[in-house]
Image (cartoon, rainbow over all chains, first blue to last red; front, side, top):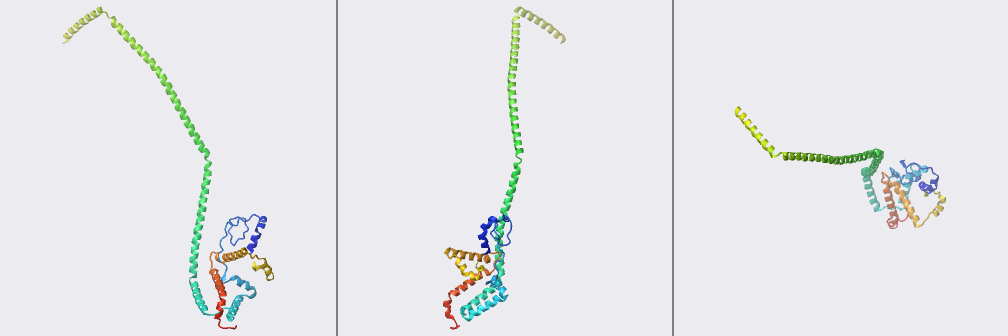
Length: 252
Length: 78
């Protein structure tokens, strides 16, 4: 009831409230919807439900009667009501009463004997459900944290951009240099080829002139040998041969 | 809210409530939510949550069949 009052008054009071407590505080009791974000975080379930005595009557009834009648008040009330119903036959005792008594006794015996085991089993199931949900949440949180770290690493990497560009600039400069030198070499080769050609031309010309001159001189010399000179030379050769043969006969 | 009303103001309080179908449905929903969140939607719910509902069902069905059960009375005059 109190919570509903606050719910009605909340929008009016919201304007005047200071900023509410941060969303990370764990609520230990049912929180009133006083914060501006009432959906997150969801308050946890209460641990135990309302107290019930003998499985039938809520504890609040006993507390309600306690100031006026003490501890035995509700029991006296119960006894009085029971006797009244029985005597006026508002509650009629017939065969159904016997059936109800048997059923209730069996039920109560079963609950008293196996109640705790069943409760433990149900608690275990609940725990597993909660554990899987929690695991999912933790995994998600871990994934997000690793993503954050990787993002930070990427941001750190960005700082190295200057080195990257320096390296690229160096690469390009080397390429340009290599290209320049290549072309220089080509130019040098071409020029050398032309100069070699000129040199070869000159050498060839000189050689041809020499050969031609030698041939011309030989031709002229051969032409200048007259028949008279030929006869003289042949006679001289014969005389020389005779002298040689004589000397040869002498040695043998 | 009903618990906060004094006895003298009961009739005026009763006149204040809206008895439209929507209002009644809202009241039923609120009562159900209160019971549910108090006794059933908890971590370790006890037996009292459902036994109270079953006991209420038993009592209501007894009341509805009282006219039929009247004939099983042992004495005519009480």
